[in-house]
Image (tube, rainbow, N blue to C red; front, side, top):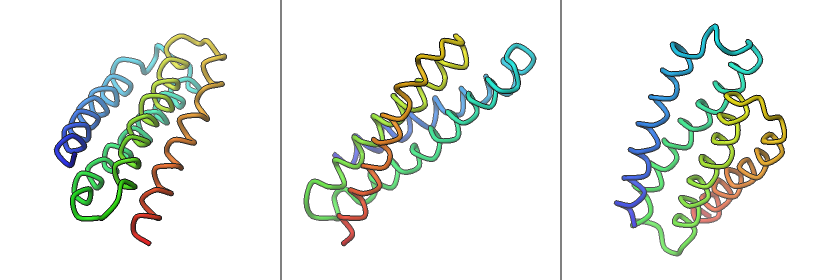
Length: 120
């Protein structure tokens, strides 16, 4: 499982850097400053949690129990739902997409809780 999260961390980092560059170079001037900020927030949390996945890959085999694995899947879901909904909101302007963003935030929080419990 540690290799799965290493792969997901690398993939998330790759996509996060690509989207960050796209936002900085391809969207500046095309989006309003508010929507560009929304996109950048998605990239920021995407990258934070790509690093969290990297940490999960390092500890998954070293910590007993399933909590690190659950944390990794929560971080993955959070990237997809939280950051993905912000990307879609910024690019389409469909504000109802913002309604699902908090679900991704809850997934991020659940991942961090799982890591805390695993350490405890």
